[in-house]
Amino acid sequence: MIEKILKYDTELFLYLNNLGSNTWDWLWLLITDKLTFIPLYALLLFLLYKKYGWKALIVFVVVVALMITFTDQITNVFKRGFERPRPCREASLIDQMRFIAVRCGKYGFFSGHSSNSMAAAIFAGLLLKPFYKNAILILLLWSAIVAYSRIYVGVHYPIDIICGLTFGAISGFMFYKLATYILNRYINSSN
Figure 1 (spheres, rainbow, N blue to C red):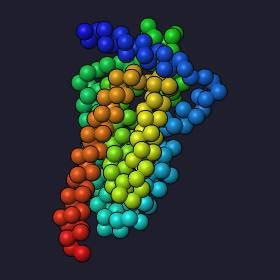
Figure 2 (figure 1 turned 90 degrees about the vertical axis):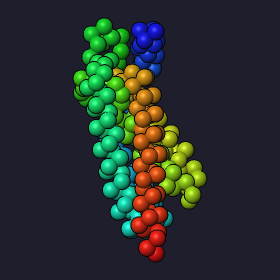
Figure 3 (figure 1 turned 180 degrees about the vertical axis):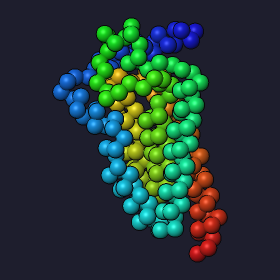
């Protein structure tokens, strides 16, 4: 059963990865770069400050730092635990795929880019939803694009992406609950 799922996963990877073209490679390399979205993060922090104030923003920054650390570390535990090679490490696939990433890490299950972007999307989207109802949809779309970029550049299988997005959604929701608890207990009650 597992072998069959992994076979389908590889086939879907090859299909999605080979949809790419040299014309668009630069865009997907830009999307997959962690530093590309610093302006988006700055905008989200500004919007959170604008709607919640300085004290709350400090809470959000600390909670986001904890959330990203948490998702990164759990992702690494899974990668070391499962030791599933990335597609770019599979000799049997290298001639069938497009590998355009800057580097190819050792293990790929599950995607840290996917988990981190989804955690950020859920966290910020839920906090901003009362003020900007479509913010969460835009952030979810952004996270899905970031996740797909990992398939496009050749470093993750679809299952790596789906599991990363799922874990990120759970993490984002947990840390959203933590942030709202801290706000209600310590910030809002002191006003």
